[in-house]
Image (cartoon, rainbow, N blue to C red; front, top):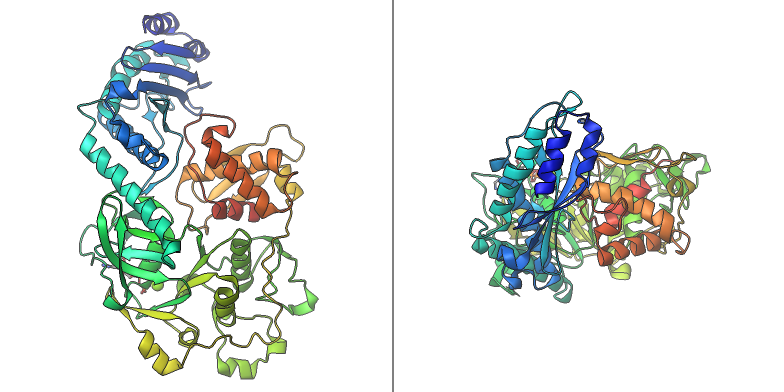
Length: 561
Ligand code: ADP
Ligand code: MG
């Protein structure tokens, strides 16, 4: 500690590079400080520090991190506590560039596996970034001293130590996450693909604000016919709407809450923080949102079950394009998701290509099958479930065609749910076992694609491939700008960063050994899930969050050759 003070005195007023002397480890009594990486100049990515506190010293009840699920939840809780303490205790800007900033990476409404706070071997490690202060290129030693000796210990005390650390709140956080995992784990055993508990608040503040609608939200309530009561380890019995496996249709008038329900199911693959409103909304972990995405690139995907006989004899068994149409992009999105083992497809009419979803009788008379390349999803959903066990949840308010293939129909009426399966049967008849696929190619789900050169050598000869993000929408991977704007279940910048590093990790470690791309990506991800995000070089940056296989693959699939 005194050593650190001495260094700061010595380098005060010197050139910025002298900050490098801070690198090292310092004993602060109640915690240990590591200065892990010092930024090169005031505008560069801020310096990285880590703080170690013995869990016993902090007074963390051991049962709050006794299992992996609990540990991850507590790590999330502590990360948020550090972020809150930074907002309260850190003055902020102290000079040019990033001077004076202090930060920690935390999640939004979701609880994700991150590497910002780690609890291991009875110690809590928190990784922060610090903008070491400068005027021009000159070190402001006094300001640095204030940050490290006054602000940082105050942040640590508030966030990681009793009594300011709120143990009851931590317990509620941990128990809520544990319940969510238990809920999701039960789904398959109960034959369900999703569950929405009574009282859930589904609408969000806005399309760009994932927090709950603060006023006038109508709490969810399950209709009796779809209601089930599940038992959670902490909350006990919870009643809610169970969506069984199969083909489920969500209908209702415009603006009655259909898309809001589907969005909640999309996010139901993640855990949510207490107070979010979706804490007891759970979906099958292999549920994937499928949408049209015209303009995306596609390489080597077999879209023939949905699209064949393209004009000019274009191959759709091994379909590649730099500029997909609405229907070909949606077909590719489905086939790619299935390649990675998707168990549930979530589809909204709002973001679908109409000609991919339906073709009505009149149009079938006018444009006969031999002139129409598209076999709409309508003709394949039963087969997907009956023969491959892949369920679908489809929002469709504008066409009745799906009534005849649905196992159940859920109606939203002014944000209230009713089951209308019986009425739908009266109108459309018994569900058709398998509508005519009229000679379309078989639904072959066997993965066979292999990694491409663009993926394996992102630098294209340059020595070190740069991996960076431009918001949630764009991953820079070497020479490639990967557009992730329509990958809707990607929720965190840390996931985007981790995806970039995972692709590289895969290219360097797994690619040779694996027979297919899907298998290789899955084993790369499994290695990181097992060994931790810190296995991804450049190690211990603290700004990563774990993605799912589907989003990892989505990024790979959008690399342009
Ligand atoms: P649809 O897809 O049926 O056209 P949306 O799901 O887009 O309808 O919802 C329309 C509007 O209603 C949105 O602004 C949404 O936030 C709001 N909304 C949805 N569900 C609820 C609810 N339970 N309580 C209050 N407002 C809601
Ligand atoms: Mg809608």
